[in-house]
Image (cartoon, rainbow, N blue to C red):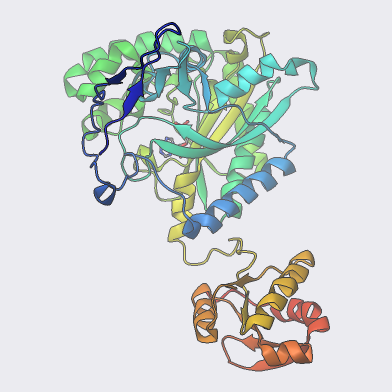
Length: 469
Ligand code: AMP
């Protein structure tokens, strides 16, 4: 390697130039980074992260498409808040003693010294935006939906990542049992339309005063059973006792089962409100399970809380498909006017993992080019193909092709691998005659059609065809 020579400028008055050798500054090498081009180490994914590759495309597009369709159908409008927010937004909203804030949030100092966090959920950002954009002056409730990446430095395991995706809906500005039920309905129907039969677990955790009274009772009870609890729950007794109710450790199960039930500590208003939410669900025909230990992990929740599980798959908390509830105090806590609100979020990695395991995904979208492959042979056909493909695209027929490949055999193999139902073949003869061949990939039957009639013909041919893979 050549040593760099630095030229040091002398003051103008000095004529003589001196050349000074600068000592190369040694930067500490990255631990396993090799110095030569040949041996550069490949870079892997960070732990807990996941690539979404083209083979996952249809699952992700289907989920997004369904989320958008559902949200629109129930009058929710799209909103996306930034992935990066001031950290205090989440500590104040979710509570500093919650697992999400205390153990899982990605927090760091930005280059300008601001303490920032990658969003560990959607609700706090939605409420900040509601306040910042003066949405309280819009017709209430303001109904927004969001979709995107969420970050939690959790312990990675099946169904648990450090970057994952949530589809959520928030109804901000009014308190009414029908609104809670509507949120549950949107999430329930989203899952149902994807072919997932979900169970709704539901509970009420009352208002702040109810919860404070209940917590005193619960802490007394948990202290009396301390020796039976897991190490985590022993710590939770003082820090976040409600979280003990969520623990899935076997040792804690019996203690939790016999714990005082929050529902018995609800005031009249919360009790009546909850009964009305349940009546709405009955009216809608949504089956639900009353779960007295369901409290959700975040401080902002009040009254109705709920979670979704795939039917028959509820034994582990990391199987939850989503959850939500009311957060009537949050707007005020973040500096806005007192404004009731509620919302839900569904975890898309878990939804997609269920879809992937299914044999028949009848609602899965298709890749737009999945049915037709365009093969060409010879220079003239090559250029003509480019033009025909563009004409087809303009009229809504999307095809896959490989114009850089000369061999017809090779192109047919690609068509087969891609699962095309039909291949269009254009050779020198067809260019000359103004025709093109449509080949059925299953039967091998070929039909010669006039190029001017190609688009109408192929549209008709593929209308009912299903991609072969
Ligand atoms: P939560 O608000 O924590 O209940 O999260 C709502 C939903 O997001 C959960 O029910 C999961 O489906 C999903 N989720 C939460 N944490 C993770 C994670 N670490 N990895 C994957 N999905 C998650």
